[in-house]
Image (cartoon, rainbow, N blue to C red; front, side):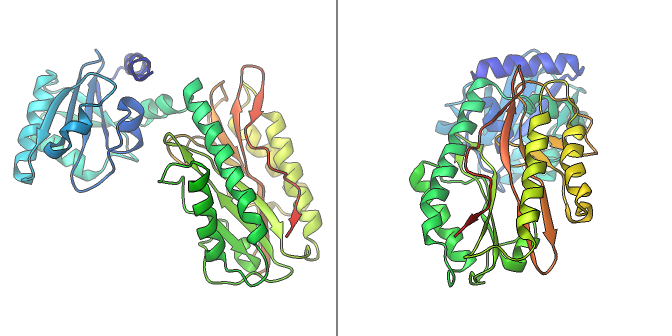
Length: 367
C-alpha cells in the first residue's frame, strides 16, 4: 500500500511540476512510510524526488525504527550533537542531486526547525510552499484509510455507549471526559486519541470548543459530547447532544432545527457537489429558523490522520466533492450563557453518493 501511495505522490508531483518535496515527523511521514515519528526537538525529515528517490534524515538512535520504512529511502542518521545536523542534511540533499532545485513543504506542518536545517545544509535549495500538492495528496482516501476510519468510528461509538450510564447530576465534565477516554482505549483505540473529548454542560455547551472542567452536571443542562477515537492512525470525530433529566425550554425546537440541518447537508453530498453548497444547505435551514448568527463555525472538515484537514465544508472552500473524500457534517446552534446543540456525523463520498459512517441516534437523549 505504501508503494502505491509513493507512486501516487510522484504522479501528483509531475502534475504540479514539483521537483521534490519534504515531509517531517507526524502524519505526513506516517502516510508515506508507515513510521510513527513524533514531533520533537530532534527533526525527522523525508525528502522525495519526482523520480521516486528518497532520503531520510533521522536521529541515529532511531535506526531500527527507520529501517521499518515501507518505502525505499537512503538513510542519513545524525548524532546527538546539533552542530552536525546541517552536514547530514546537506549530504542527504546532495545524494538526490537536487542542487538548486525547489523543495516543496507543507506550510502548515513543516516547522522553522526543519526548514532552517535544510537551508543550512543546502543554501542554494529553494524552499517553496506545497500547499496545493499536500492538499491533493491527502484529500481523497483509499479503501484501507476508509476502513481504518470506519473502525475508529465504531470504537468511539462503543465507548460512548459504555459511558452514558454514568452521566448524572453531580458528575463533573472532567470525570466524564476521563471515563470516556478510558472506554475508548478499552474498546481498541490507539493510545493517542483523535483529540481530548469535549464534555460541555449547561452554559459551557454554548462554547463550540469548550474544555472539560470541574462544573457539575445539573438537571436541565444541555450536554454536548464531542469525541473521537483513533485506529491505525486514522481518527473519528463525532458529536451528540443530550439533556440532563429534562430538556430546557426552547431546546426541543433547536435540536430539531440542527437535526434537520444535519440531515439536509448529508443528503446533498455526492460527487460533483461543491463543498460550499453543503455548507449552505445546513446554514439555510438554521437561518430560516432565525438562528443564523448562532451557527458559529463551518459545517464540516476533513478527517484522516489529522482531526482537521481538507476538504473544509465552508463558504470559503473551492472544493468539488469526489469519491474518497471523508469529512464531518456538524451544524450547531449556540446561545451564549444558556447552552448549545451540535450533531456531528462522519461521511465518505462514494461513487453513487454518500455513506454515513456514524450510526448513533441523533435525536436528543435525556439522561
